[in-house]
Figure 1 (cartoon, rainbow, N blue to C red):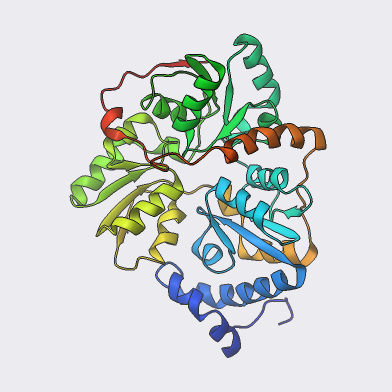
Figure 2: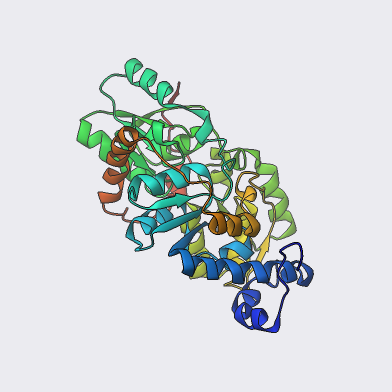
Length: 360
């Protein structure tokens, strides 16, 4: 067509039929007429460029199922970037994820479809802030959530994810021979970890704007409407949300839980697209609200993924000195064995456990 829009031809329909089967409950037929040609074009461009697309769990279904070569949480995608033989990595996620991919894959070209795709949690703290914290608490290990910028990771002793934060807090306390550690920047993750360990935690008042908005009233309303629904919550939520949930864990843990247990109804207390993406593989499970959209994740679209690959634009780079120091913190985490119970919070212990958190 004159405006560059591709038509949904019978050939493209056949090529994208598998994807349509996954997303037809979340995407309207009218939307699909625009999405399917873009999916076909993106997959062609990937082959031409020798590229792979890393699609975070919070991407919309047409991206997640349509063009994502690897899908998962932020660290899982970064590991895949390092393992992949592809020359070009397209990060269908937010900026700190692209930086982490570049840190672990310095010789690859890392692109992001929209440079404005940021993160409220990552922007809550800087490397200069971490240096001041270390001056205030000399000798204590600094554990930084992967949802941070490269300059923050560069000031860090070891990184963690929501899946392994308890394990790494206890590891760091043993390695440094201390009874308290610094865990930044997510206050709620720190408080939720503190419920799982006797290690005292020094925390920073950073928050994810998506998970911060959930309330216990949301859960009460869901339980009243659907008494048989299982409630799963992300540990970036306030601690009272986890206490009211049936299960708490990372996006990967929540996915594993639903895939393993296949409950009839599920409430996922996290970003909206998470439930939509799992639904594609579990048509018999009913996913009910509430959910909140991440405005930063939603900056990534099929169109700007196509443009990113077509024009090889919006490359993400990291200063060599910062990347080298940040790589040490990330690699330390990667080298630790996975936790005995991957990505699952012990909610039985959490209820009634004394929380030992000092907020900076």
